[in-house]
Length: 230
Image (cartoon, rainbow, N blue to C red):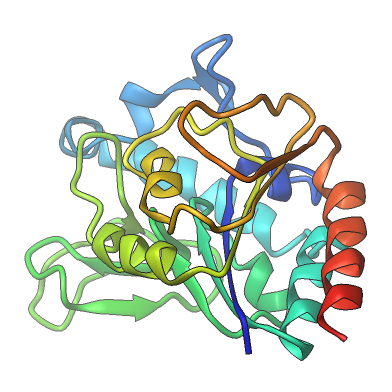
């Protein structure tokens, strides 16, 4: 069974209604990223950071996977599929994908501020000041903030190197280290890039660019791949 590795970004979730960071205006839901998505922000104003992620978490309970998420789950009928996502939502899991690696954390999880190994599923959407881990420390969002290490990147590199087919969906490939994953694939690996603003990638061979939204481009690509596998 051939292995497909998929790298997804904000574009795939945007079609489900998840609001995304827009680099053009430097704002994320009316906030500067420096004020809500860094460790300094957490130390400076934890109430604001908690409120920001609570709102994002609440929104996540109000949206559903779209056609692109569902199509990727369908790929598992004929391929060994691993998804590497830069998104912190669980829409891939909701759609039925079994192997999802979250590079930047998970919105529905929280972790200890003194022990990174203490990670919990949050009941409901609200994390409050005074919510503590088993060691008595405040819980924080289980998110990789800007400036923090990306603990799952090495596993993502390993998966990328194993790919027989590599698919990139809904990402500008401007955010590192995730953007560098395309350079870990084997030289002969076919690469598909699905994004309305997609362009050719320097140094990436066997590249097919699909300038479409994920909701239309991904189901069409999946249909093509499933037909080839028969």
